[in-house]
Image (cartoon, rainbow, N blue to C red; front, side):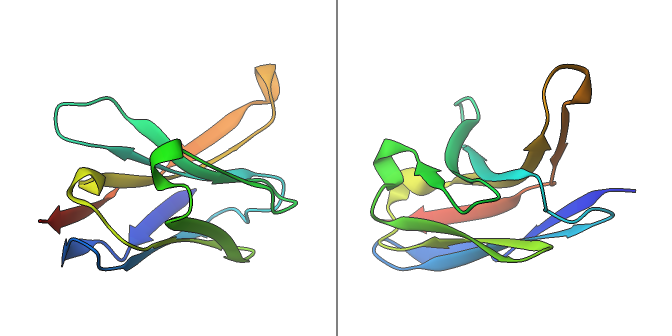
Length: 118
């Protein structure tokens, strides 16, 4: 059974940092594009950062320069979040996906809450 488990969320003040971690069981991340997504209150889920197996990272514009996604090892992907802002408040989800068409597979974690006070 595949599981993605996020950790590291919490309540911080504006300008502070948090580091989120996503650990997989049942799969290794080899071959998967890994990503962090978030859903803010009253908004749709959006992509925050993704990283390919080759280490190519992409970021949503509002987090560019503040957040860093990294593949720590075969089973762990982190998201370092610096200079946090109140608008970063959301539930953050880890995602793993690979393939296309009939070969497409994707997995989601349960989410971890990040709250940033002003």
